[in-house]
Length: 351
Ligand code: IMP
Ligand code: ZN
Image 1 (cartoon, rainbow, N blue to C red):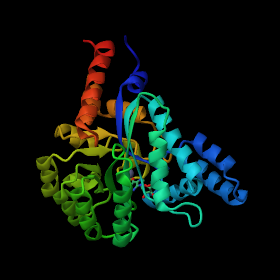
Image 2 (spheres, rainbow, N blue to C red):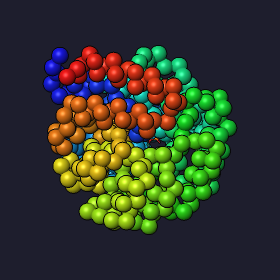
Image 3 (tube, rainbow, N blue to C red):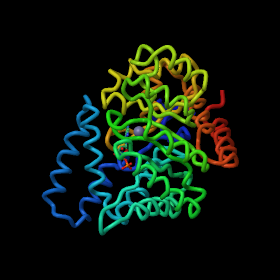
């Protein structure tokens, strides 16, 4: 059964390990949330206009502009019903794109008088638990925002620990994210260590911009996964020492091609550090980061990787299968996914 590359990438079972909830909302969800928001329409319309204008800019935006975009979707997911719908829509859209395992991440957010941080996290977990979407397993990673300071990070971790026992199969890890130009890593290392000591897995955004001292501290933490890992190789603003440490410690990296191109942290797909990662056979997974903001899908990321780095369909299959090892799920869940992959291979890839 021969499919064209785009269709192959869509039907290929895939794992999405790096997706921020509020960056993943589709235009459809945004329109629906906007319609039912019942808020003063001028403000929402302004948000909506700038949203459409900016996400349609194929040439991309600065990192700063990208971060402004998150405020727009966050203004719509400002009450529990909207958070619930947003979560379920995103799950359905990933499933429609052939994603069999999704780790959604989101930063606890409160809206005074409307929604507490606890309600925010619980609503996402409930939306996952009650999703009627078939064929996709979903987990939640709670993000700590490097712009919010160590006290908020500690409070957010306490919150996760309080609620985790209610959703032991869903809440699996912690992420450090937010504008890489802001915040001091030293403020967040202790809270990440504490999260780990209490059984949460760590995914840390790392080296989105050059910062050798910070990157070394993150590598030394040895998180289970790194997000982006852009400026680690010496040719990408890192250093030989950092690159060697990354390879030596075999920390899997979450590669977000379109996100990096659109935020202009890499000049083009062809000049992306994925080439170095592939050449070194370093563990990695492809991810969308923010499929709404960057107007992409996971299958599109697979197709772009194949076209830019001459990957065969077998390479794509192997790459997707390898992602199972890096997922924050149980060994039994991993075994079931691997089983599913081998059935799929027999049907679609028998050589
Ligand atoms: P949320 O946490 O669900 O509200 O998703 C949006 C948030 O994710 C943003 O406000 C950022 O803190 C974070 N985020 C999304 N994409 C990136 C990225 O590429 N680098 C760092 N942080 C990001
Ligand atoms: Zn990210």
